[in-house]
Length: 346
Image (cartoon, rainbow, N blue to C red; front, side, top):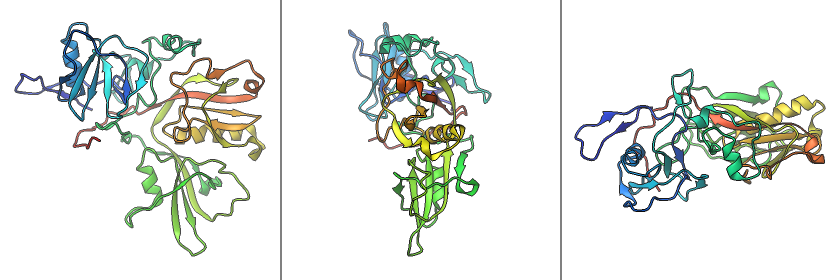
């Protein structure tokens, strides 16, 4: 993704360096406005706002609201907090590079560095200090966003099929939403083309009609399900990396996926639990317990605390001892993306 920056007084645009993946945060506020400086000022885009910050004394961070072209000049970075607008863009005055992916795309520290073994800490600040750059990566920080803050497809990486009824997956999930499609689109291609679609299910009604159902779903392995599934698949968009092994941890804020009793093989149950999380682009943690089964991070039904602390990842309890597998993960799209074009802001 090549960014361009035009200074207010300049006539020509000059090609700017590629913004490292994860340097800009979408939908998050990371600082307060600095005093003694007019705020906000006008900017053409987030990169322009960042450059204004570089040229302003005492400015360490910025925030840009594209709907009004407002550029907020900020103080020292704080623990990120959700913005009221998903299109709000924030970041440091200068982007740091911690590495480069095989595709040539530069990576910010948030997308390349791992936390210390002490993560998470007892408080949000202690958790942040477990990362070399002093911040716990926010959800989907290392995923491309459209200018309006919405998630973009990870073009250049194939959508991976995790489960398929053609290879034995029952696919009889509860909790899916019926999706009406135009005549030119089928249920599978619709799901593949939607980064937020975890799985699909084509169901034939008693009247012979095909219905399309999409979502993450739960209890997909029921034997008593009275539904005629023609085909179903579970997908993963992009890649991921593990930030912490959650084996032996209770995790607060997770949502139910299925009971362990569905499986005689615990390894198969662990794999299915892992796949449930990986298919949901908003899932950043999962764990499987021999006591109460599979639980995962599903923002549509609940929310994993950000940033997590030892109050959210709990060890040394009887319930934690039953957790045989789990992970705290980060979603990645390591391919440069061209996200230019007109976008509507709301």
